[in-house]
Amino acid sequence: MKHQERAHSKFSASGAERWFNCPGSVALSEGIPDKQTEWSREGTQAHEVLEETLKYSITPPKNKFTARNIARVNSSITQFRPKTMVIHAVHAANFILNLYTKLQDSEILIENKVHLTFIHPEMFGTYDGAVVDHFGTLHVFDYKYGAGHAVSPKENLQMIFYGIGLANLYDWNFKRVRLWIIQPRIKGYDGPVFWELTIPELKRYVEDFKKAVERVEVKPFDFQEGSWCHWCRAKTKCPLKEKTKLEHAKMIFK
Image 1 (cartoon, helix red, strand yellow):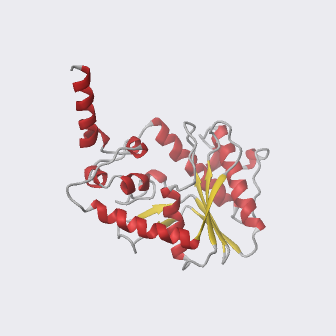
Image 2 (tube, one colour):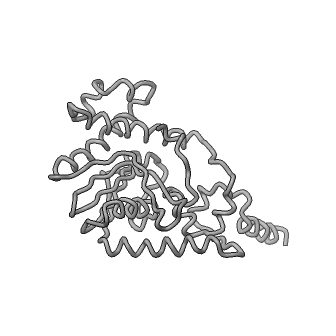
Image 3 (cartoon, one colour):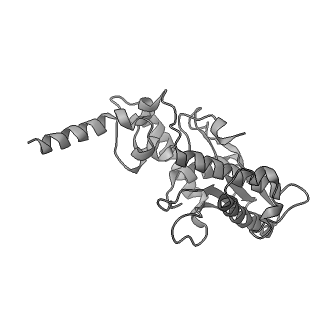
């Protein structure tokens, strides 16, 4: 499925920072479509290239990708795609595949949807990749193609969302979860970075998510400003933003 064709949930993984911290944004955003920009289209394309590269890599006979043999990549991956985008995807795929092959009795998952319906029926999201080391470590990967600022996996609610969904799918039969961010275009990039949690630590976030969902229904709606405002579909009509603008105007014309 094309990334732009995915269904979006009320409590999505990608929007977790927003609905977790600003309950009022959920109702305010209803009915407002996502705005497509040059950067969002580029990110979508980059994710599709990684997905295709990973799937092609694990299709028998298994192909080990390197940047050197990029010309051998399936034409459906390279056609009409920037060469640098494919090279970044190849390196990301290699990292994930190398981890997968090192772990015995492991399982690799690519672009699957996870559901947190035990918290709310409209709670789901799609992760980029995962390596399941049964009864050991669950590795979850998120591919970021942005070059503006580095995204940290530490206390990253989008990644925690994926970790909860996958751990729950496997009945929590892991000792720990590693949440990986792969962001190849960031300045000073030195490879993927991870944040590790134990299963008890991850389970505590389940309770935090439940409380956040409950806050969404509380009126009057609670609005909170923060970094999550940048991606909010309803930021142009946010009452908190309007109040801030009004106060700023009063100071100017005082």
